[in-house]
Image (cartoon, rainbow, N blue to C red; front, side, top):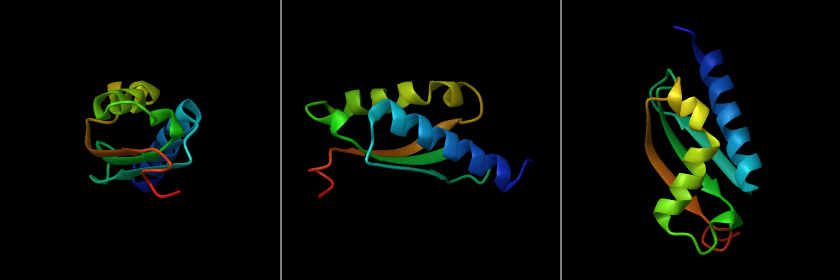
Length: 88
């Protein structure tokens, strides 16, 4: 197994892609499986303003589509909020 380095690189790459694609104020990708196959994602972005929960998730999935085709098997949970919803 690749260890923490591979996982840290993967989560950092995913966070960066989400941040850039959605101009996010806050992004956190947490590896829940230890091998990058299962993750939990939190995103705060005003790009979500006026979007349904499903469309917000689609926006995030679009940003990390490459990782979802390869390493990541499942997103176990996803939280998507606007700055106002997050209290920022």
